[in-house]
Image (cartoon, rainbow, N blue to C red; front, top):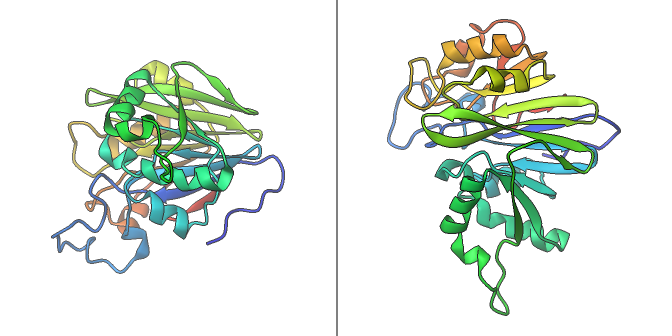
Length: 266
């Protein structure tokens, strides 16, 4: 699949993965969704790629990152935003080294201070001197807690409740458009809802039908989306409880289930 052509001030969003931590199909499961032949029920671990204002911004590097970038024709990463340091969101980090080779420079990485501390711990080898003849991810880490600029893009980190884990959602404003992305979320404060209010596109966690200890389920996700009031909304980070065709028919106007490979012009 080829990248979007760049043609002016617009924001382009690629859903690289829309699944929960174990993906769909689930290992060893023979439920209807895991056996489904519908490609929209095949979900790699969640991440998105955003193109706007001439920049390519990746949010999270899940274990499936290499296959995702190959399948969706991603050949550039100008910056990486990390939501949190859970395995399903960062274990593809090592594959950034190929983008270092292609681009000839280090890639800036943004996240909360505690998340970046975890990255230093998990990927300690990447922050040590590189022996001659070897190559490792080359990054510069930037702890953030307030809005910051990536070129002409404004990025706003928004803290949300992920069952006690430190978790940032992100709002991106660029190309005259706005995007909110929160893949892991149990609940939001009023301040967090206000930070995303009225975005053109909102992407939100909707793990399953039943409540969960650290993720929003379908009913609460729809309630949060109603408060945010985005022009269009997409649900992501879904497990095998969610059958795409069945649940899509139940959603209100303006809300859709995302799927791996979905590309949206914002």
